[in-house]
Figure (tube, rainbow, N blue to C red):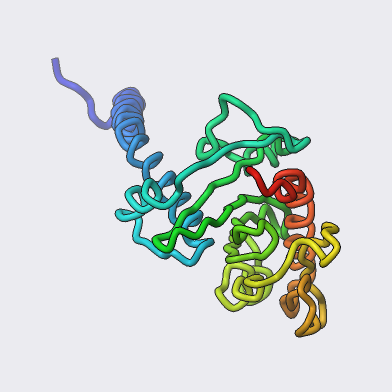
Length: 235
């Protein structure tokens, strides 16, 4: 039986068959690549955590470096109480934040080759055009900032997107969360520039006021939740 390849019926059937074949191929490829995509996401997260303490490693090196230098991790609830049965690395604070509120507050404990310990705290907030997030590393006193990394989803290049630049993040090193009396003060991104001697202020981004305010709000809200942990020098 001959087939009329110029008929509408043939064209319709051919389109359906090709659509099914392509769909199967795409679904198979997607499922096959999922474990690799998940692994890459995890390695990128490890890179960001280590970057907050000034350790820049490649994606391939991230897993080994993370296992070597992150010696402990735990999770607190919104009231500052330690939670059992929750793995810090598996907590997706961005998803929690977008779904109505962060419920798990992880801490990663870094121990360098010199034996010094640093506490790394992830955070998430709102920029001008979408979510912003980052990691703040604290020295052993749980007060002095040892490093900071921030990132964003869609801030404007040259303006709010500057939060991901080294010059902005470097300002946080050495700043304090608590004043000399032990009161929580946080760190504020100051429009017009912070005083050089201000232990709690850094310069805002020119033209990026809303994103700068978002960084201030993100740090203050997150660190306030961790206040019981930060004041407890025994943990």
